[in-house]
Structures are given as structure tokens and as C-alpha cells.
Length: 154
Figure 1: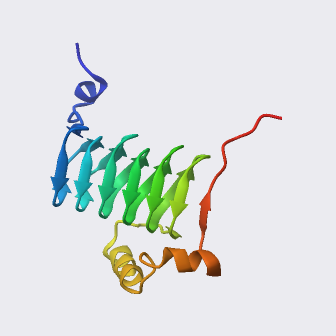
Figure 2: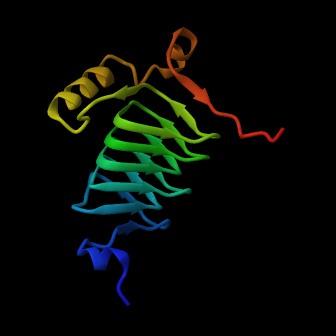
């Protein structure tokens, strides 16, 4: 039986299981499903950060779906922060979707091409100017830091 990935001629996703911890950068030429822990940067075509996953590092990918915990910046064409996810860092994106009950602490930076070298330079400048490390202080000033409440039925 062929999977949908096989039918399209695409590679099946690589998976980092819940019992695996990686210290160092991870690079994939395809889709990566992260259910374990990574302390380092991730570069891939598409990243799915599972419910119990933890990533401390920067992400560069075309598509990023976050369900778990991410501490670091993201540069992607499409970013989706799903319910119960926890993100601390700056997001550089073409499109961004944030579901209710998501914790997002950082800056959202729309860009026509967040994967371009110019976007990387802006990211580097923001990270070195203390934006990522001083999110608590920005919260009191004017940063976009908010936990969205769960939906309520009327």
C-alpha cells in the first residue's frame, strides 16, 4: 500500500521520537516530525513540533506547525501555532495562524520572503539587540505578548 508521500514521489517524514534528545543542529531535506527534544537549530522543508516536543533553537523551514514548546526564532513562509503550544521568540513569516489557548511571547514580523538572507540579517539584529532575551521587560512596555484564552460557549 502506498502512502500519500510515496504516491507524490516525496520522501516520508523523518521523526525524532519522544525518547530522543539531540544536542546540536538538525538538518533535513524533507519534512521533520519532532516529538522529542532538540537543543540546537533546525533547518528543514517542513517542521511539525509535536504536543510533548521541546525545541531550544532557531528554525528555518517553509512550513512550521507548533504544538509543543519552542524557545527561539522561526523563519518560515507559513507558521501555525496550534492550541496548547508555547512559543518564546520572534516569528518571521509570510503567513501566520495562531489558535486560541496558545502562549506566544515575542515579535511577529511579516515578510514577503522570510527565508531570504535579508530576513536572516534582521533576525540576527533583533536577537543581538536583546529583544529575545528581554521579553519580560517588553511585556510592560509595548510588546505583543499574550496568552489567548480558551473559547467560551455563550
